[in-house]
Length: 291
Image (tube, rainbow, N blue to C red; front, top):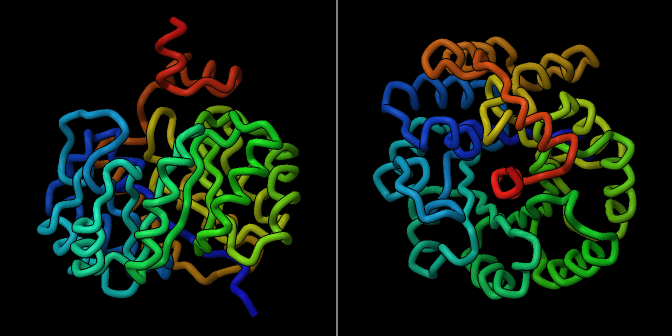
């Protein structure tokens, strides 16, 4: 019988947007060690070779060999995940990621970029790592566009397809509607990545789970781009309330409260622009362009 839930903590990767991907060794230790002891199945540690924008970023935005190995030394039980944009991925990268102990490669695809991404998915599959394809800004897709994208991706046999509510604009009824169309029609698993612009990250995660989605992303104190993500500690507390106690909430809370105290995340004033993004379904780049 399949586990009803598989949790991926994205604190260092999505939360890296809040620190410019800079994390000191002691911060990594205080975050990764308790997460690794919590029973969470996957811990995502950053981007390989940067994000979509050519910015100067810290080591979690680059995932060079020394950083990969240091994180791997702290992650003894969980599987280690790294995200990459297709244009930033080479065969050499794949070899090094695998040699350094990366278990799951998450290929992040912007809308209208699928054609150029498919060859990279193909070479990633040959690397004998788990592969997830993460579709950004799922709220931007028309129904026929999503149908076509999933059909094309399915030919490359990914392990997981993630839908990301990048703008935090989905309502639970819509989240459920999106997944119900695909969840039983493909052999691979589906995942959900929530943002919390309307305060609905947890409600949307539950809506996705109600359709059979098993893979859920979360991050400590909700640390993530913009307003942030589903909070790992709150989501696990919910799971405990329904008697699903596979994750150690004490360990997760230790890491989450370290994030709050050390990185000062989860205490910042909320900017009106983040609500506007959720209400109007705007990406950060789109919102800046329309101001």
